[in-house]
Each structure stands twice: as structure tokens, then as C-alpha cells.
Image (cartoon, rainbow, N blue to C red; front, side):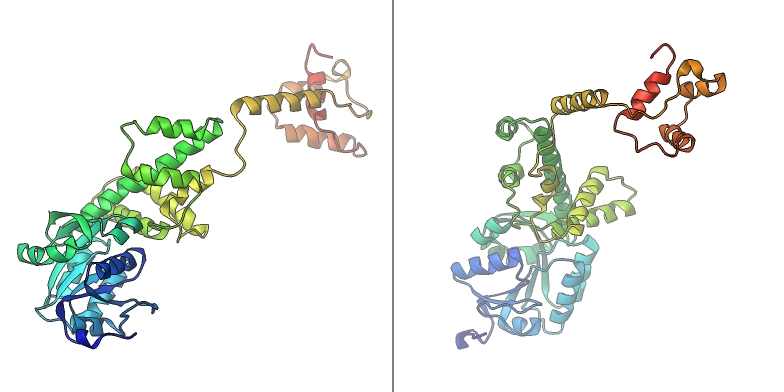
Length: 371
């Protein structure tokens, strides 16, 4: 892509962004609007301004490089590609949600540069408006120098501790987010199954202590089946898998997190990996609402009445008073109904197929004290 000659050498106003997913793309656009010269690189080429040919070329142009790749492997591969081009003037800001050990490994790979871990909370709208919240980790000196760059795309910066600590906090907060949306999806399913108005549920939950910014943002979209991705299933699933893996190494039982992980995995298997993670509500909000309990009871009574009114085939039937004691004992035994039907088929192979309800009426006739 074309680049201005005035940006052929690194300056304080040059920022590199690696990873043009939902967040990286939004941050790059926001930084441009605030006056920074932004150069970008992505593993798959994009038709965007100042797209460079490699991470190394980005390092030649920018002192500050923000990394928004999706997972542990991508982060480690990216810093490996950068490492030989880095000098002490470079500042690497790693924003990926990864295992704490992976973040610490990335910092070691780029040891010639300064390194700040800057996990974030916030989705597509927050990135586009420059209103992310960063959880940061690193040395005091590195954090001080990184702050102006982070402030350009955030509304709050929370210092957590050393490198790796912010990743752990980010994973923990995502555990709450995933569990909250899964619980909300199940609650919507229950309300729908009982035939109650969804708007009454929303009205009731808003003043409830369980209500949150996440629910405020996601519930309307869940009800309208709007699963346009702001934070995808595949990325939330990755975070829940990270949580479960960390828990396993510390002998923790994360039952709720494991349940949320399994529901996200189900959506992946159904081909919804790129949808918003709130798509877990889809299976609870099918277009055809299930019958209420009262409707099911009424349907069952109508079906029973229809069975009782059906004619009984004219084929010979045994009478209880004419049966031998041994045969009469069949009606009080615990043999499966299938066995009785099979026995009847052996005795009268020419009998036409049983009508619905016939077997029940036959058994009632065989019962003692009934005709």
C-alpha cells in the first residue's frame, strides 16, 4: 500500500498495529482520527491504508507496536518475527488474551525492547470510540512510557502487576461474562417455554441486582436474534478453555465455566464460531415456541380421548374368565409391553396391524374385575 515519504523513519507519532480483527481494526481507525500515523500488518492481507509487508517493516517505521492477535500461538509467532528487528527504542504492547505463561514467554522473546502487557475489556463499539479499559502489567518505567499510547484508545487503565498477571485477571473476568450470558439465555428459554411475555422479564431483570452492562448490551440483541459479532464464539471459547486448563493445573473445579465452555463448543460445532458469543441463546429462542405445561396437558387428554373412542379390531380376543391360571397371570407380571405384543403376534399371525390404543384396551380387558 502507498505510504507517505514523510513517515519513512520512526517518529513519536507513528504507531504500528498488528492484527486487524474486530478490535485491532477499530483501534487503528480510531488512532488515525486522533492524529497518529498508523501502520498495520495482518497475517492475511487487507485493503487498508498503510498496510506493510511484514512485522519487520512495521518495526522499521514505528517505535510503538500494538499487537491484537487472537491466541497464544499467534502472539508467540508474531513476536518471533519482530524480535530481530527490535531495539531499545521500541515499545511492544501485547493486547491478546492468552495464558499468563504465554505472555511471559512473549516478553522474554522481545527482551531487547520494552514490553507491556495490556489486556483489555470492551468490544467493537468501545474500540471504535477509543473507550477500551486496559488491564496492564509490566515494569513501572515501561508502564509510564506506555500510558500516553494506551490513553489514546481507552477510558481507563488499571495496573494489575507484573507481566502475566493482567492476562489472569482478564480470563477471570471473561469467566463471569460467559457465565452471565449463558444464564441469561437459559432464563429467556424458561420464560418463553412458560408462555410469558419477554418484555415483562426484561422489565423485571433491569432493577435486579444481577443486571449488568453486559446484560444491558446483549439482552436486546438476543431477543432480536441479532448475533452480529462484537466478541466471537471462537474467541470466548478459547478464553474458557484457557480458564479450564489453568484450573486443572491448580486442582480447581470450575463447574459453571466448564458448562459455559461446552455450550460455546456446541455453537462452534454448529458453524457459529464467527457469530457473537451471545448466540448461545439461539437454541432457547427457536421460532416455534414450545407448548406450555397446560397446553401439553390438554393435548394429552385429547389424545387419550381419541384413543378411547377408537374401534377394537374384530379379531378373536382372549377373555379373562376363559384363560388358564398360568395365562391369566400375564396381566400382573412386570414383562415389557413389547413382549405382550410379540406374544400376540405369535398366537395370531394373520391379525392386521394393531390400531393406536388397541393394546391399552386389550390390557384393560385382561385386568381382573374389568370387562
